[in-house]
Image 1 (spheres, rainbow, N blue to C red):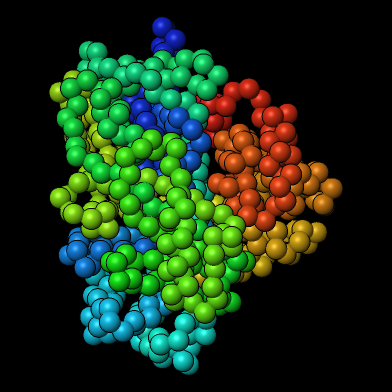
Image 2 (image 1 turned 180 degrees about the vertical axis):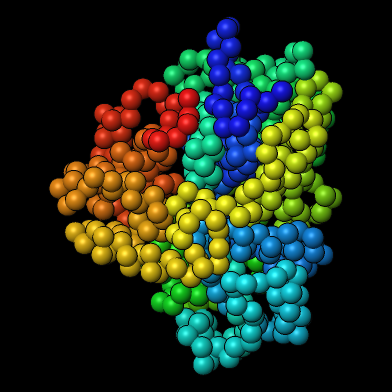
Length: 531
């Protein structure tokens, strides 16, 4: 029996937290499922062992895309599903997700031009488009995108996908979940779980060592690279073959001045992107390599850095070396083992496994950022076959926090309205620098008004703890977005880590230590219904 619409998890007489759904894993899939479940009227607890999106979900290529390269593996169903989701997500978060035009140069000796043209023809038509432009062929000698390319690439193709701040996408889903009544516990590890009397009894442990008992009617395993470990904890759960694949990226000073991205087909079978990033940089990646280590300790290798630099030098006139890399990151994707020989050929589709032999259990395997919302919707539909769910699917037409530029309902018009929204901020807050306002508009959307509520001049912003990072924003990130460390702020919430001086991390960390309080797992949201 459910607890009633938008009720928060309650404590039982034994001190345990009672809920309808315990979601383990605070990456994009777990946050998306928590949001959907809470919005359907279920009481939800979401626990994450580290920061939200701290691992795989913040180590992507920062794209919302159909997956053009998956067509070569005949994954038409996955591509169609992802293509449908591109514009759904653009409408739900017009501040965070925007169209990105890709240039695919034709390289002699690799796939012939007719094959590329056919692939893009299919890509354009597998799902309906209302916001994104169709593909077309271009003469690179006459196109701005041809200028930075190495000699020999004379023609290519341009098509559309979208870019996203992946870590913020995770946080916004968690915020939405909390505003629908979910309890979000960051830095809280699930250390044991067992079924008793048709319910799940879980023990969670915060980083300070304190313990939280949870009694849940159902359990959702969204542990990502740790999903099989949780499977082992959940007695009687069936195993699924997974392969861990490491993807690494490098960031260098910008290699070109226009706003298009590149997709390069490489002789070794990999597809690599070069993407405009944070105005002054280019993001190059990714590698696909089998990984058998600890997912928490994954990092880019020297050979991967050299590989990405060499690949960049193959296609661009401007040459780079390992010394030009200003930032790099790596993540581990838990992919379903579909028998493919290479890591590149493994399916990026997801599988949701239901099991109610002991108590209702859903385990999520695989997936990609683009399909997280439809994955969550499908997960809740399957959960509804095991427990009573008051509400119906709702996220396809709902805005994520900050995306309600023209009201609560997602719309094509809100996507087109973003430039006017951003311009309006300059009128409303004329005392803030234009570059800062533009960052606020993209990161927070309409939530910028909450962050700046009661602030009428620059003095109200408080001290500038790091360049372009004021106490006002830090306080908001602590109160509304579970920020607890300098990395949370500089790399996942703002991306300011690319531009701030070396002392900034220590200064931000010290401010957080003074102002965050001791309860790193409280997850309370100002004005929300969190417990």
